Length: 356
Image (cartoon, rainbow, N blue to C red):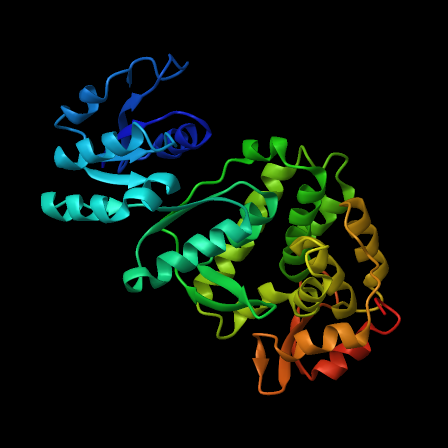
């Protein structure tokens, strides 16, 4: 695929970096407003240079804004080039016109991209899974939590009637672009929330990663390695069980209680904070003091004011339920796990003296 790239901001630069060194993808020209270091030989200020280049078969539009992005997309389609756009404003305003034009010229228009955190990825993925029974989408996660966990694996979902992720589908993104540099402007609380998912995966599948997080003198500097190792764990699990019939349920460690806390908290707590709290009652008592130390080091909560009455309705509606029971994940020692079928009331009993 030979690409003409429209725009070279954070997303455009990320697309360019992602294609470098790949034999199947090449960025031949980049449309820019002003000169950019490192792409002098392929940059241009004229859209015509891209439209008239016979080698370019695909235009990727990441400029943003309605105009001239809309006109450039139309011109690319009319020139017989396939188009991928992350421009939600253009798609929302001109989707019928663009799809009709693409059909007329026999080219593909791919326009679903999630740029943001887990909510953006889930919503865009769910829309892509349901529209026309499934269209391509691209995931560009910009929070730590989405980079280490939610951006890969193909789970897409939305909340309904106050229940977390109860409506959804399995729909894999066409590609995922992760750039740790996007985390530089992320608030510290969001970084902490993302670390919760990495601690989760370390506890169930990688004792050495837990040691590294625990011993790290600078967690921020170690984020690229933490992201890579977390993704490797999830990738290995998902490849063995893509639709969560067995092994993939291990990724729900901390989420059974965590989702109940998150739903009952009414937006006061971040998802990662709730997962951190949800792990505590589901790990062995002997392991709990160490987990508390790790969570506190990561800036995560280890206590919460709640009640049995607040959590029970949400535990009963857990999407991992099998009849009245729930499949929970327990950890006795780092790097290992076991599945346990429990009634919601049994899970609440585990919380006594830990969170209640």
